[in-house]
Length: 408
Image (cartoon, rainbow, N blue to C red; front, side, top):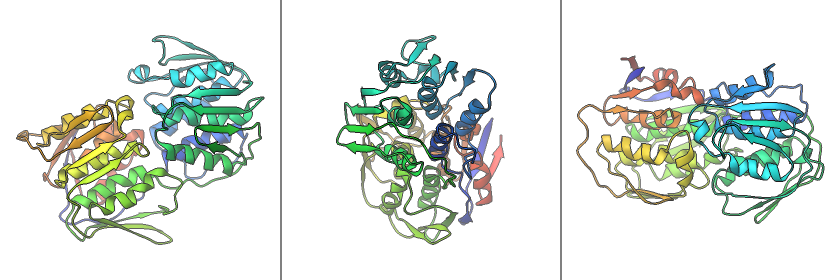
């Protein structure tokens, strides 16, 4: 399938964002651990959350989590502590993504986990049992989800758990999110330097309403940034004091001429000024925003240097390669200066005559590059349905905001 996207003449819209995927998937695990019969309110309808729901509702012991990395990591840890024999599998790409940074410490804690194909990657056979706990060391610079997965099951372990992080933690705000949600369920966590301590405790069932997703909001900030001055989008329900680390985009987009005005009902995002001449940021805490800002900066002709983007290589696709490749089609020559740096110094090349964007089975490629339809007047994009992974109504929301979406 291919979409042709054309922008509106004027942008003034209200957009109801999907619920936070990050919060939804954590709450599903915490609800199960607390034996909660009060389902979370406003659960995300995205594919990544649905596969976790399907696993919990399944009468089988074989769970296909497709391309959902969060689901694979959280369920690996959860099932390791649940009596029974389980099979966890996913998409072809998922079977290439490393899971050993989680499996190794789980095995140290007594888990019985077997690789069914490639060593270090899914699919997995898990023979679940109560884990004794203890102390483990975990690499922190690959994915914070490995640590979050261990943290959530730690209170159920006989001796609790002490996690030592062996390197700088990537996506630290996501660990903060996990800690805050665990506290909402009555579990205390102590984090000092590179040591996280969680004693044996009991989760208390609680009903929580999930806030809208700040990562999804980033695409609307990008759209506003690329639209004429005076453009605005209202997004109900977004909180200025959010649990989500990606709310950091509020201050980052100020440097690109976009302001945020909060009320009790949500936030109004406006294009009010010109962007800074250059943009620098370390995305180690917000890696899911890197594609949005790479595209926005290029289309605003703002040279940038991004650090802390090394984890982008092991996402749904190699996101560094994908962004370098696709932005070159528009005439922007990006460079990877080291394993952790991505930059654009203003170098241009001749854009392709007919630009067709590939999405690499990556929802964030589709959404971050869709706004190119504004400066380039229209855009063709392949495999647009990949947005179902996190934001199923993205194209419908674009249409409601005045964009024209044609199936070609």
